[in-house]
Image (cartoon, rainbow, N blue to C red):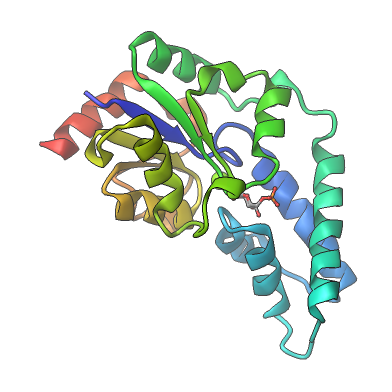
Length: 221
Ligand code: G6P
Ligand code: MG
């Protein structure tokens, strides 16, 4: 059976993916750029600065100084922090806390693998910090998703072989990172974006511990 579950945060544990989207949309409007949810899919799992670069690239006529970019990224984070200011345990997505309990009860370790600098704060607000044996956030990695470093760092720190790990993600970049790490990937969301996942469920309520383990065991062969 698996020895470690590594969860993405935004869009898997809680619906902060929506708040990132709304904050970027507001920032983009200030820059005179518009984008839709389809484009937003490629921002999921991507660092703050890289996300800004992708938005700026939508309008090649825009040319910002490094200083202005820093300011815009800061502005976006302020919008985001306002949106998450009042979140609490009610914002944990359906089925997630129960799943964390079952994993923990089975003696399997749990890590967080997030690209967000706000990750620890969000986990605290949700009251879920105690389920996690280790937290990998933006401060701990040099190469973000789709590079596997976020996931391999968690496994390395806890001394667990990659093939004994299961990663859970809502972003295409995240699924790619898990696959590159040689771990079993669980995608949460639409197969339009997550077709590369080893196992896909359409939402968190469909994450069933026993079924995930069954799928993992047949993947491992
Ligand atoms: C996660 C989210 C991204 C976000 C990134 C950085 O990966 O999926 O939408 O841009 O974290 O988050 P931060 O809170 O550091 O700006
Ligand atoms: Mg995510």
